[in-house]
Image (cartoon, rainbow over all chains, first blue to last red; front, side, top):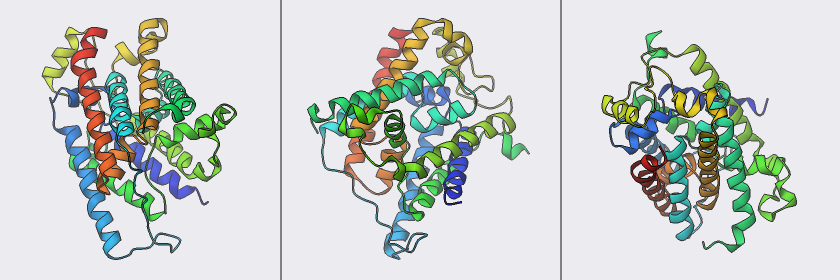
Length: 137
Length: 185
């Protein structure tokens, strides 16, 4: 029962990402060509909604479902990892038109070729795990 | 039913994605999909090779539940909530893709040329998808997050590291789309 709420949130996420076409290779290509505002609109409104929601949570000390304070840890300090890691991610994102959420959503929807992207993404994660201590942060 | 099958407008979709993030915060969690890749590696036995994968993956089961829910959501949306007018991208984009030999959407989410089942016969396309995946997996772990963890969770929490990562995402994406993609196709 404990996991049902996560399953339902995930379900909503999968529906929204599919119906907004954020999972579509075409929409990502179109976004990077600056041919449409659609994707920029989705990302901006998502951030604005999150920003307003988090401000309400912080200012009113809203507690989570278990009654604990909602604390969202700050991201670790650093520069190289964010610039370089981000750039590498972006190259992959534009090449196959999917980021991690959509990879799973598309496989769920029956796009079997996307399993190849998942295999690659797990391999990439594994390679990072092997090299982690040698990379600049 | 039109409202269910049409392409959902950006303001409605963006709002709901923000709600997904806030719901997870309310459940005491942080929205981020790429962490699941690390969890899956650990489940597959990667902890025998690198300390990075030695962590209590069971504490991440909630995120795997989100992932399974998202897969079911994708299935339902594609099979029961679609119509042939979907994915109405800019005609200029369609023209540009035609020149690269990539088919128009006509309601499909992904081109046959890159994602159809015939691609399993094409070593080139197989390589493209695997290499793209490697870049996504490596880059998101090095940057500590992907579009959900940095662009949505991080930026809405005013995190400077996330801003650096998101600028990186777009610089990488633009380099691929404008300079590398035409060389590959």
